[in-house]
Length: 188
Image (cartoon, rainbow, N blue to C red):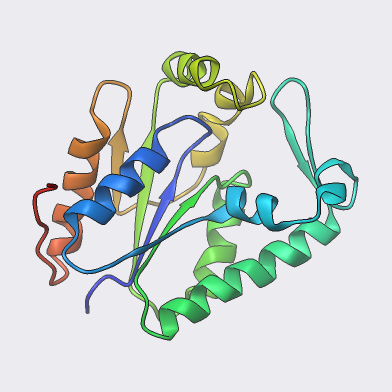
């Protein structure tokens, strides 16, 4: 079976988005890139970004989610799975804040599909420096998420962006996908 979904899980500023862009360049067929939680938050009404029912980002980088957020997230996940079942290949860039429990939710939604689970790790100090340089994240989020997102999560492959370029990580991931029947190409 050919890989249909690649799930990248890592904390804020770990380098997932850069890896996704490189994966799209090196994989031979078109892959849609979808941010699991980031795209969902952008799609939600602004009022849900600061409510007990939605999602709250604390000043220390902590994240709290409420019941309405969880309901919308479940629908969002089902939508991504439907795209794959309709024939699209999808790379999901996510932050599994609930660790193993978050992965189990994805596993239920993606049941029957060939999924490559990839952990994207980065030293928390390096991720925190990237976070400061970006300037568009809540300070402390990278450190708060660096380890917790990996707790109990089972991966097919782990890459570490602390000292490894995102292109190299993408080629490593593509090499793993290739084992499922795809070849990768060099980026232009």
